[in-house]
Structures are given as structure tokens and as C-alpha cells.
Length: 451
Image (cartoon, rainbow, N blue to C red; front, side, top):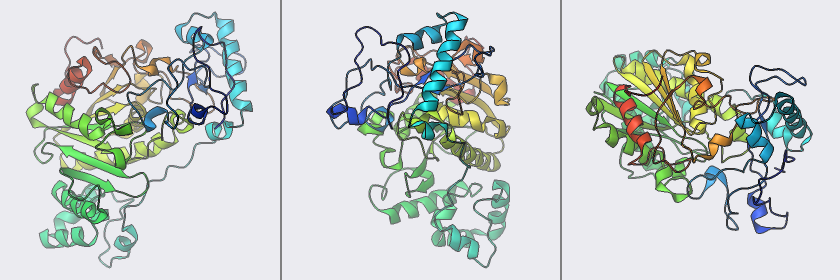
């Protein structure tokens, strides 16, 4: 993807994009960042006030080594995808007068519209399509008229299996592990058994992997959901939704081989930390990688196509949890693009969901808490050193994710993030954010935090 035109000049001393022949150029030209646009609530120049537009500009951090890939795809703490130019910062901070803000928005709109790569960014939203479980065709052809794995309600699945009896349940696990391990409404113990079988059949690195798994599908980018704690007795369930760059292949080792970026490691840290708070002894935490994430900070990350598919999968997954544990309350935790997934899922979540907590969020797809149409408490945290602070809440042609939840105008309950140095350490031991999220996970309470 080619670079979009730069709007505004670079900050003095900032590094420029490399020449096309530079070794680093091949790994920098696909970086995208969303540049702020018109002031909310104001219309001008034919551009809706709540617009978003992507434009990569001058780079503020050192160039990566040759052969490295930027963004969530690999490498250490998540760097800013690109530094903001002077105009971008002035718009975001409100330092430009209204006419100049309107002009900047119009320039961004023009930049996007005429860019050769605009087709990927500005394409009409795609249809939401969830993958059928492995073995779905044979399952549907079974003469027993088994529940359809794509359309059956989790409650209906639960009732069907309850009437089937233990022997038939075990037979279905043996015959259709891919479906039984993926089908929401299947009792937890049966899903664990089905996924153990499927992981063993898949070979390395999945065979012999310790843990309990509610989801396993190695096809494509892969999907996984690992459970920490006892779901069968939990009064409280926390579901962690990770962001860009996560794949089944790096689920345990972390994006770029950095374990602190591993959803499994983060969920385990959250589970251990929550044990020290009231209610934590009755908590189960799930690291849920149930959707295809963007490969990094790119055009896909600036759009909501993948998030909409993820939201549909998350709604079904959470409904399955609620069907099996109707008395338990549920909290959803979203990092980065995972917060966008949660935001789009919010209106259809079951009433058992009492808390939505997001961190390092580029936006939840709306501009205020009320637009989420949820009765759940909404929490947000954003560290001062997180590059996402430069992602402004503006919209253009379906690009961008709305006002950031950490913006006071959004209306979320803010939690402290002291100790978080970048985009990737919100769940690191010793940080205020992990302590806050652990308390939210355990009971939903966080005294002294501004609503």
C-alpha cells in the first residue's frame, strides 16, 4: 500500500519516511494513522463532523531494522504506527481555530479520495461471515438432525445435548471434535474434551498443550480460547479480547515473540491478580481469540470489517456462556482493536454482561457511552505513553472507530494506568492498570474512580 499525502509539516527533528530504495522502506510504506478532522458537532466544507481519515506522516521513532515488520505483527512494545505532523497535533489538541480545522478535514478527505490505496480503505463494508466449524458439512448430513452449528441458539444446543445422554455426547465428541469444540451451548467439559482431541490431531505446537480450551481451530489465522479457573462453578467470568497481530501461532509466545503480548499470558496475569480481591476466588478468565485480527496497524485496523465479524462471534460466544452459567455475571476486556470488537458487540450482549473495560483503545465504533446501548458499566484506560493517544476521533467513508473511550467526552469511567509505559503493558504485573482491571474482573467495583 502506498503512502497517503502528508497533511502538515513534520515536527522539527522527526525522521522522514525512507526513500523507496531504503531497506526499511519495504516495511514502513503500509503504516497508516488516522488524522483528526472536524470539530465534533460542527459541519463544514461538506464533510460530516464525525469523520475519520487515515494519513501516514513523518516518523517520530527510530527506523526499524531491515526486514522487521512494523505494528502488531512483530517486535517489542507496540510503537506508534507513525508520528503526527504539526497540523495533526494541533487539530487534536484544539489549537487550531474552527476554520482551519475545517480546512484540515477537507484536505484529509481529498488526500484519502485521490490516493491509489484508497480502494482498500474506502471500500464498502463487507458482509459479516463467520467460519463454519471444521467438520460442519458431515455434522449437517448426520441423520440425527443435529443442531445447525451456524444458526442454532446456544440454549437450543444445550437442551439437545442434555436430552442426548452421556454416551451419545461422548460419541459426538469423538466423531465431530471440530464442531463440538466450537459450538456455543455445548457443556464446558465436552468442549474441553473435543478441543483436546482436535489439538492432538493438529500436531505441533498444539498437541500436548496444557490448559482448558473452549475453542480451537487451526485453519487460516487460527482461533483459540483458553480458560483460567473453573467455569463450571464461577460466579464471575472475564473475557479478554486481544487486538491486532494476534494469531493462533503466537497465542502463547506473544506477538513478535514477546510473551507480555500473549493473550494467554495476559489472561493468566489477570486471573492471578484478581485472586487478591473480593470475589476473585470465584472468577474464571478466558483469553478469547475467536476472530481474525488485523495483521498490524494497517488499512484493516483503520476499518471495522474484521471487528464486525469479531463482534458477531463474540456475541454468540458470550450468549453460550450465559446459557450455561445464567447466574454468573460477565465482564469483557478489550485491548486495542479488541475494544472495537466489544463496542460493536455491545448492543446485543446478554444482560449478564455487567462491565466493559477497554484499554489502549482506538475507539469502540461510537462517540459516547450512550451509543453503545448497553446497561453494562463502561471503563477505559489510556497510558500517557501509548501511541494511540494520537489517533483522533474523526470519521470518513467508514474509516476509523469514533471518539476514544478515554476522552472525557465519551463518558466512560476512567481507571488509572500508572506504570504502563506503552501500548502493550496494561496487563503487566505491578501496574495500576492491572490492579484496576483485576478489581473490575473480580467484582465490577473500583472505588474512587470518576464515573
